[in-house]
Amino acid sequence: MGLVLELSLNLIVMQLVFGLALGAIYILLASGLSIIYGLLDVVNFAHGVFYMLGAYAVFVMISLTGSFWLGLASAVLVTALIGAFAELVFLRPLYGKGQLYPLLLTFGLALAVPDAVKIVFGLVGKTVEYPSGLNGCFMLGDVLLPKYRLFIIGLCAASMTALWLFLKKSSVGMVMRAATLNILMVRVLGINVSRIWTTGFALGVGLAALGGAVAAPMVAASPDMGVEITIESFVVVVLGGLGSLNGAIIGGLIIGQVVSFVSLFAGEYSKVAIFMVMFIVLILRPRGLFGEEGRH
Image (cartoon, rainbow, N blue to C red; front, side):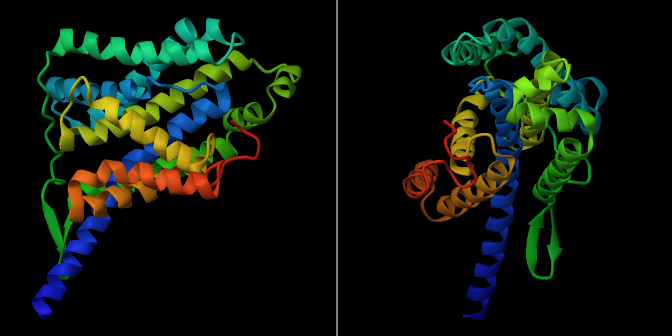
């Protein structure tokens, strides 16, 4: 009986860690979506594309240099630059013409970019090796803890802390926060709002790329890897409340644990479960956990 209880404790702790690691990836994507929606009022259906590009960027850089850490940094930087270019060239001409046009554009990008990636890299996913020292597990007492998933949790916590400091303490971050509340006031103060839009979009897709880069060793880089994660990220955003970073964090943690523990007992229902959770929350609180009253 003691052995059964010990194994059960090990299993519960491991599932908690798996859920936290998955939730960390959801948080990175959902926080990026929240920044883009809060600042630009754009529902970015191409968010999973940037997640996928982050995974391929880390694969390419590891192939060239052998360094996972350089790949991680370059994935965020390169994808953020691609996002800035996309905002300047494709999205900006559509501002003020209705929400439907940016939505359709990002949906089109979500269809077109994976096909372009298939032409360049082929249909078969690209395996990314775990960074040295982070593969395998270590023992904490009698509990096995996977090193790489703990790294993902720590990286997400550090990223969210850095994002909070950027938004709260830096001048650019404070202007971005002001722009989400009253864009007219920011314009009257003589601030170049266009640069703020580009910076916010680049920041949002950079967070998505970071999620894809850290997920690549676990799932491999494949052209269609962003499709499912986009839907799940929108569930997290809606659950937490549109445009709320706090909601993205709490929603990501909740959905990560739901997927982890439902997968343990009934794996075929793990994806259905996240929609059930969203359904229940929206019945009780239609604007989500941290959503603003009256925001759609």
